[in-house]
Image (cartoon, rainbow, N blue to C red; front, top):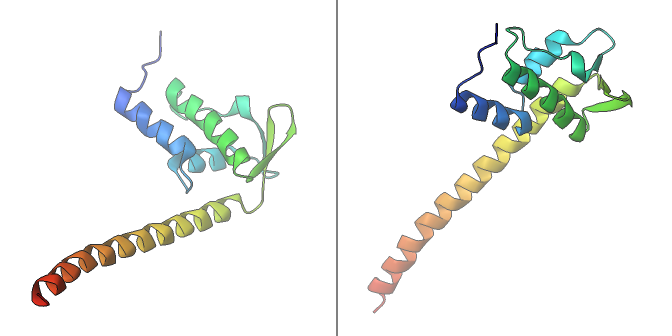
Length: 125
């Protein structure tokens, strides 16, 4: 019996989660499968419901966490996660939130500047 695969929208959402620089549900799934020593064979990561798309995303997320410096490959296809890997992800999310807020505030202030400059031009003619 073949396993059902996820609809395209859910697969795209999983693909976004794989590279998201903040905690995701994939991270929770990985954390649940990590033993006490936080070392796991990438091939052993598996979705609880057996979905192949989610299983693939879990393995890709583990590799992405390695690229982020939150895990190191100790043997071929075996990753050891830093003791603080989840806290580090939370810090990345906070940093991302701060950057988004600053960009939004800057865009808002620049957006308000243009109408003011336009009014100055009209008033000083």
